[in-house]
Length: 445
Image 1 (cartoon, helix red, strand yellow):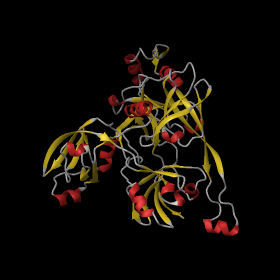
Image 2 (cartoon, rainbow, N blue to C red):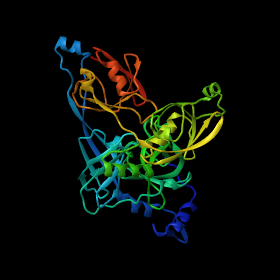
Image 3 (cartoon, rainbow, N blue to C red):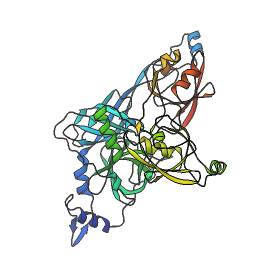
Image 4 (spheres, rainbow, N blue to C red):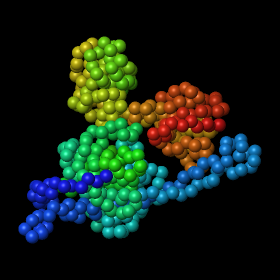
């Protein structure tokens, strides 16, 4: 996916402007030869390879539970270990803190860090945040090299960047390209504000560094769009503004605290706008306001249409969830909204989103071993399966970490209270589940 840089004058300009950070290009005769080597040599020692081992349940081998009991077949094939690889970036050498992706270390039993010089270290997870796909690891070692964190808010489309990581488990690899777009959303189901780049990013690059020409970290490489699993020129990185905020909250509080506006919303499309007589093309329509919430204190009302937050245009409900979810409690946001055909402005001090959790054993015997929380971090709604214990009844029936339950016995569920209400006193549950980019049905007895 990497695009060869044919503009040979580009590097000379870059290195003249940043002579304090990298050496001048070498000479061939009386001509300068552009090279990113000084930049790569300065930044590569801060990027680590991550090796993860985890135990997974293989699930049932022979049909449903009644069939297995009748013929005396084993309940499942038992747990097995799988290995995977990713990347990470040392951002605090003294404390040994490393930034990577949540999905790289999710459910890991063992994490090994390989430094640029080949040294192998044990790592522990300090905390993770699935919504932004960021995790913080820690290693105990001397002589670590950290990468300075740059200002991702100052990044512009067209800026030259390099990506450093561990693609396909090959080890330290460097690719180059440009920033292709900013503020990308709708790639997955979390809270997103991605930097898009054409610097080659492949499986194994996840958690690695997106670096500007000053040798500063501006993003944590996180995702690609690909039909083949390889790179096609479209990769995404979590901006350091978001990654740094998540890391600070994990280190300060042990968790990530998210801002809460206190509204229930729906996307306003053209047809809905015409039905309401609203002269707007898009936005987020407020359908409910929580009493004593930030929205109510700011003077917002049901039927108001939010069209901008902090000068960022709001196209639909997902964009509003993103913007507010990436803010912290106590942050003040400026909201532009439409009421009775007039555009107005309000300022709201965000409250704190409280996650309500429940144990599966308290809901249904077949859900024992699973933990649930309301899926408020994405636009899909539903109930998220946060953890599933290996070999538990929930695991044996097919539930997995990260599953989103959207309906039970053909009844939509948008909260844990909905799940409890629908599932209680039922012998058999048919769960409609979103898993990644597919939807499936699980039978729970």
